[in-house]
Length: 269
Length: 324
Image 1 (cartoon, each protein chain N blue to C red):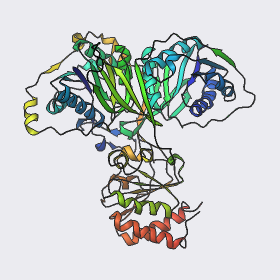
Image 2: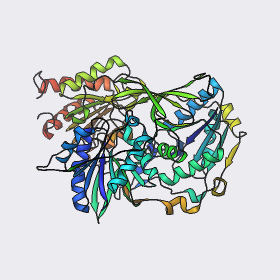
Image 3: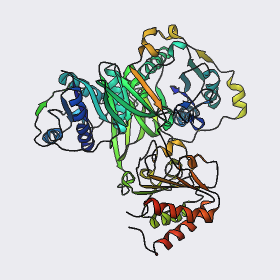
Image 4: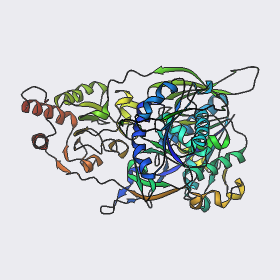
C-alpha cells in the first residue's frame, strides 16, 4: 500500500506577538513546526505501515525551511519526502496550493490513501482536503477520529477498503469507503510518537526530493499571488481593551475581585 | 442577473443566512434564493419565503440520502447554474466545511470558510474570518466570478419578514452514486449544555489535577449561577467533560457577561472563544500566563487555594443563596 501524507509547516502560533498600536502580528523569524492534526495524520500512516506494510511518502509545499522541518516526518517513519519550495509557489491561495499538491500527487502516481490534517493549525480553513479530492476526482471524508484498514474485505476484488469514524456535531458517523481516497484527520485519532534520537540522525539518509514547477507540470499562472482569487484587505488582531488588574496576594485578590464584579454589575442580573 | 443563493442542511442556519442574505442582496441589487435538498425539501420551501427567499430550488435524489461532499457539491453546482447564482452562502458546519471548498474547486472559485462577518463595501462582499490560530482576523474579498462562503452556523439569527412570497422550482439532478457508505450513526448524548447562551461561564483547563476536582469548579459555577466549560485537553484528551463543553476555535464560542478562567494558561485557540465576554477573570499559578493579558482581573495563585476562598466569599456576599 502507498500512503501519501500532506504536511504543512506553520509558525509557532504561541509565539506570535501583536504590535500594540497597529494590531499587526509579528511573525518574522518565528520557528516553524507541523500542526497537531498533521502529526496525527503522519502517525496514522506509520501505524498502518507497521501493521499492514506500506510505503509512506511525506509531501509538503512551503518555504525552503522545509528542508529542515520535513526531517521530522522522516524521523517519525516516512520512507521518503517530497518538498516543493520554489518561489513561484509562495503566496498561493488555497486553490493554488491545492493545484500544486494535486499535481505532485499525480507525479508520485501510485497511491492508495492520502492522509492529511483536517485543517491547518494557522489558517484552519479546511479547504485543502476537499480541493485536492476534487482535483484528483477522489472520495473524501473529514473530521476522522478513528481509521481502520479492512483486510480481506472482498476476496473477489482487489479494492482496499477503509472504515472511519467521523465526528459530526450531532453524531459519530461510521463510514466505509474504497481506496484511493482523501482522509482529513483530527487530533483524537492517535497520540503521535516522538522521534527517537537515533531515528533523527538517520533521517538525513532517507530520500528527500525537491520538485519544481517543471517537475510537476504546473504553469506559472496557475499558482502564486497572480493566480490568487482572494484579496486580503487586512489581517489584524482584534482590539482587546482589558483592565489587566493582577493580584498576587490571594486573600486581597479574592476580596477585591468580588467587590469589582459587584461594581461591574456582572454578578446580578 | 447573478444572484445570491443560500444552502445549509440545518434549517435554522439556512433561515439565518437568508435573513443576512436579504440585506446583502438588497445592497448589491441581486435576487436571493435558497437550495433545499432531500425528501423534506418541498415542505420547507414555503417557510423560506417568509425569510426573504424569492425562489426555492428543491431537489431530491437517492444519492442525496447520506451526506457526501462530492455529491452535494455536484448538486449545488447544477443548481447554481440553473439559478444563475454567483454568490453562495453555506452554513459552516462540519459538513458545510467539507462541502464549500469542494464546490469552490468544481467552480474554480475562491472560498472562505468559518466566516464571522459579512458586509458590502464599494459594491463588494467583504468577509472576515479568524486566522493565525485565532490571533488575528483577516478581512478578505473573493475575486473569482463565483464566490463560495461558509458562514459560522449561528452567526445570524433568523428574522422573518411580513408578506414574503416566492416561487418553488423543482430541479432534476444528474448525480453519480455515492462512493462512501454510511454504516451507522451514533447520536451523541443529547446536548444539555448550550454554552453559546451562557450569561456566566466558568472554564477549567490543564491546571486541574484530577477529574474528581471538577466538583470544586462546578461548585464555583453554581455560586455564580454559571455554566461549566473547558479547554480542549479536558474534553478531548482526558474526557473529563463532554466535547460540547469545549470552548475555543474548534469548539463553542460564547459571549457571557462574566467569564472565569480557572487553571487556564490562555492559549489563543481557547481564548478566541470568549473574547466577547464583558468581564474576564483569571486564576492561574503562573504570573506570566498569557491569560492574564486578556483578563480584566487576575489572581495569581494555586487554584486549589483560590477557588474555595472565592466560593466562600461569593456565598457570604449573597447570604448563602445563589445570585439571581
